[in-house]
Image (tube, helix red, strand yellow):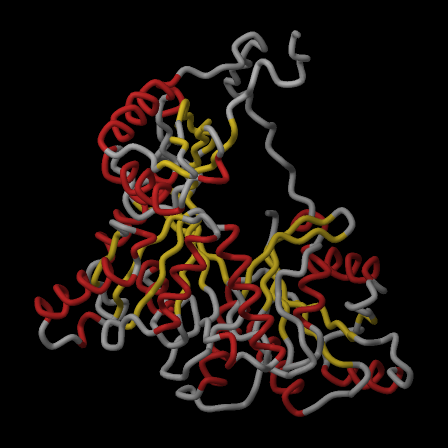
Length: 474
């Protein structure tokens, strides 16, 4: 992107609504409650012919540095320092407050370009607040309505004027010719070796989920080596699903921090419901999901439900037992966790579990290795020949049961997809195959083809009858 813009202002002036308008998606949570946004959220914005990187920030409040509001203010100041230009949003409907004047002084001292934006200018009686904004000494305000998309052309012109055309429209380098291999349409079928190859250089999307106050944001900050995400002793600080990127051993990792997920019966407020829904979208978008447990109180009912949710969504899962530095008897606790993992999560037999500490950095390298290993298994493909030889063997060892006096026959097996691994078995009377025998096949696949901890799908279908529909000869 050519330049970076930070959206700043006091709480509830419409910063996140403007952010969503500029990125063209409802990425940031929006609610009438002040202070919804807490972390700074980046995005790729488009405004008419401008393309730039934009950062949504928390509303500025006067508070001490040790308080939650003070830590949110530090995140906002970091975004201002990172940006090339700030969009200072004020509420034309409500008018100015002392917080607006404090923020204006802060922006003026930094000496960077500022565009004053008077939001909610479509409201009746907003003229007074619009003209009052002139007193901030930041130039003429731009009247807009972020909710209805009014005034976007004027906002574009103000940004270009503040930055200059050379900065707003940098000359793009000529696109270098790349070596692109066009495959023949006759070569539609990939060989099994190509299907089995795993590309460990492609970017990996990882979601971090868990109960509130399990240490998810602290874990990501430790990975990044900076206080990128807001943390603290208060439960439920994170609300938006914030994505961050970094390189691990030459591979791009895009990690999503999510809001803590409480039991559904306890989620009553609208804002928390929005946060949980955002976390669920992050799970569906991710490839591998790390479920963070509090090692001091592991395997609460909600922990098990979150793991089950991740597996039902078909994602590769890794368990991270955080706060390991607070465990007094590590060996005894580790043996107990292994036993509980096998007993309480039978649907994910062999799931990878790593003791770690986001506070001290213990176990982070092992956790990342487990994440990539789980993704490798999640992408695994097995040849049809191997599957059918395996199917003959397991049927010989444990034949399918007889139903209504008739023996079931499993005739043919193939893998229909990966991510997660899914298999199709052609058989007689698929509706009569008991769930216990499907579990037997699933566990056999895990053990014999080394696929621990990932969801495995087995679909049954009736074998084609070549004589179906033909009249019987007399």
